[in-house]
Structures are given as C-alpha cells and as structure tokens.
Image (cartoon, rainbow, N blue to C red; front, top):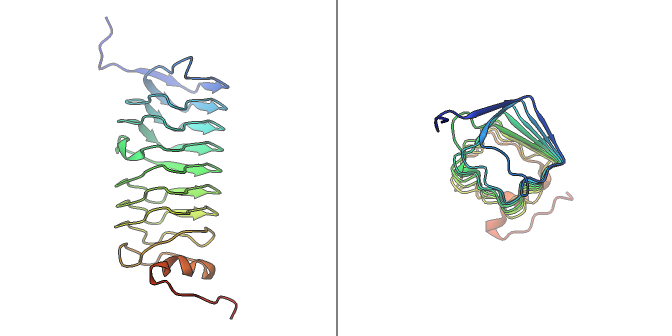
Length: 197
C-alpha cells in the first residue's frame, strides 16, 4: 500500500498535445517537465507541484490551484484566464509569463517580486495587496486591472498600456512609467492631459 505522504516524482518529461480533461494528469511533483500545446482547462491541479517547468501554448483557463506549487515556472503563449493564483502554495512561488492571456485572473495578496510579464494581456486582473516590487510589465495590456494597497516600488510599466493606478492607495516609490501612461495615474481626478506639447 502506498503511503499517502509519498508523492510521485516525474522528471524531465515532455507532454505534447494532450487533452488532460479526458486523460487526467497524475498528482505528482513535476520537475524540469515541458507541457506543450496541451489542454488543462477546467482541470483540478490542487496539491500538484511544478518545479522548473515550462508550459508552452497550453490552455490552463479556469484551472483549480488550491495549494498548487509553481517554483521557477515559465508560461509561454498560454491562456490562463480566470485563475486564482492566491490559492497556490506560497513557498518558492516564482513565475514568468510571455505572450499570455491572463484576463480575469487574481493574484490577491501574492508575492510577485521581480516577476516578468511580457507581451501579455492582463485585463481585469486583481493585483490587490500584491508585492509587485521590481516586477516588469513589458508591453502588456492592463485594462481595468486592480491595484489597491499594492507594492509597485521599482516596478516598470514604461512600455505597457491602459493601466489605472491610484497613487494614494499604492506604494509607488521609484516605479517607472512612460509619459503617455501618466494619464493612467491621474484618472481619478477626471482631468484632461495634453501630451502633444
């Protein structure tokens, strides 16, 4: 009989073009694995552990993440809509995103220090009470994203668009913004800014 405390280890395996809704993924520790062009949408990844894994061209929308561990994981060209990252295991939680769609996801109270978001859509994402210090939003769309009591000190927004951040409700020291993004910092004042002069 297998001890419930002993979890399966799967290392350096590539999963390609798999529909995990019809072929469920085993609860395990996945290390240095690659998931390519696979559908994990609406699956339950609770208590899974992913370390140094890559997800490439995958659909992870509406995945359940209770106590899921992501340690040094990369998401490239993935759909991650409606995810609750605040439910993840906090120990060693480190992610990066490139060319991803994270619309309607939540990172409430999550530590995302130095996290890189590149060429991604983050519409209506909740960053309330996050630590985003020294994070980079490189060419991202942050339309209707929520920043409340968020630490964005030294965070780089210079190439991103559509953000609206209340300077009174967030820690912003040394955060970087472009001239064209200034209106997103003053939107609550209902003023017009002429950037042509």
